[in-house]
Length: 126
Image (cartoon, rainbow, N blue to C red; front, side, top):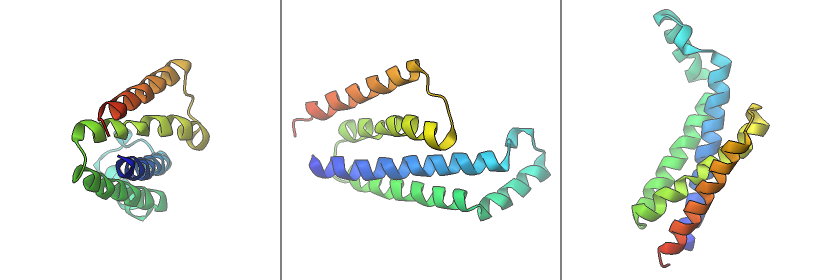
């Protein structure tokens, strides 16, 4: 179980950093929903050369391969709830790096996610 926890913490951290970088990069590109086809193609080209988007994609690839490794030895009913720890990291880091406001209700939901992950991890029996 320790191996699973360590690898999942690395995976979730990589995934969270990847999500933050992708969000930051896409905010810099602008709202794609307001663009026509030419604008979207231009944004796609810009995305391929945006360091935040490239690094964010690489971090999500790291998450993916660590996730595959965990799935090779752990039950999905144990591993998948650990992935929910992403919500905790996103809440903390989005405030500081993206300037987002996390309301008390969101924090309450985040705490409930943590409690659920702990219960599932403890129920696996080691």
